[in-house]
Image (cartoon, rainbow, N blue to C red; front, top):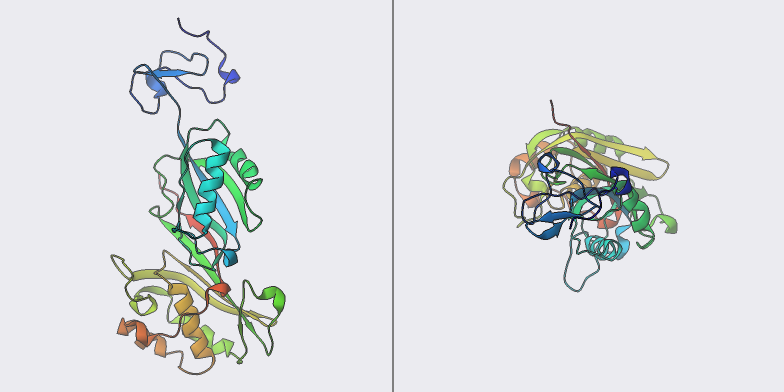
Amino acid sequence: MLPRRRRKDQDETAYLWCGRQKSVCDPDRVPGIYAGIAFCMGEICSMKKRVKLIVAYDGTAYHGWQVQPNAVTVEGVLNEKLTGLLGEEITVTGASRTDAGVHSLGNVAVFDTETRIPADKISYALNQRLPEDIVVQDSAEVPADFHPRFTDSRKTYEYRILNRRFPIPTLRHDTYFYYRPLDVEAMKEAAGYLVGEHDFKSFCTVGAQVETTVRTIYDLTVTKEEDVIKIRVTGNGFLYNMVRILAGTLISVGIHEREPEDMTRVLAACDRTAAGPTAPACGLTMVGISYETKKQ
C-alpha cells in the first residue's frame, strides 16, 4: 500500500517515485510524489545535490589543504566535520591544494550529498563545528557537473612582505618579514615582464607532475602601504610553488641582485635555477577564485 499523498510544500526534499535503480530520480519520468519517498526498483533513493563551499583559513597550523596520512590538513578537517554534520561519508574536492602554512580568503570546494538541509544553510551549521581558523564564507548548490579545478577560472593570490628593521609580532602568521630595503619600483618593472602567456617552467618546483608549464598571468602588481609590500597576481592557473618563486624572484630584483629585464632571460631558460628562491609559505594567501560563466 502506497503512503498517503502529501503536499509538495510539506517536504522540501521532494523525493520522487521513479523506475531507475540506485540513481537520482528524474522528475520528468515520475507519476507522483508520495510522502517524501521514492522507490527505485524496490529500494529507497534520494535526490543528490552538489554543494560549493567558499572556505577561508589560517594555514599556520595545517600541513596544507590536501589530506595526508598522520597529518592535520584543511581538507581532512572539512571531511570530518561535514561527515559528522550530515550523517554520511563526505569527501570534498578543492580548487587549490595550498601548501603547509599558506592561507586562504576564498578557496573553493565541492561535495555531493543527500542531505535535506538547504545548501545555503550548510555554511551556518558547519561553522558551528569547525575550528576558529577555518570559516566557510558561503555555501550554495551548483550544477552536478561543476568541478572547482577543471572549470575555467581566474585565481588570485597575494604575497605580503613586511619590509622594515624589526618584525611586528601580530603580522608573523600572514606576512613574511624581510629586513633588507626593497626597491619597489624595480620590482614593479620586473613584474611587467611576467604578465601574459609564458612557459613558467623556471618558476616551478622541479619534479612537478603537469601536462604543460605554460600559464597566463592576467595581472601582476607590486604595491607598498607603510611597511608592507603586496605582490598580487591573477592567472588562469599556477604551477607548484609558482607564486612563491615569483615572489622570491621579485625580492631578488628588489635588492638589486638582478635587473628587471632579466625576467626575459629567466622565462626563456625554462630552468628552475634561473629564477630566485622560493619565498616562505607564511606570506602567501589565496585571495579568491572567479569562474567564467558559460556563454548561451
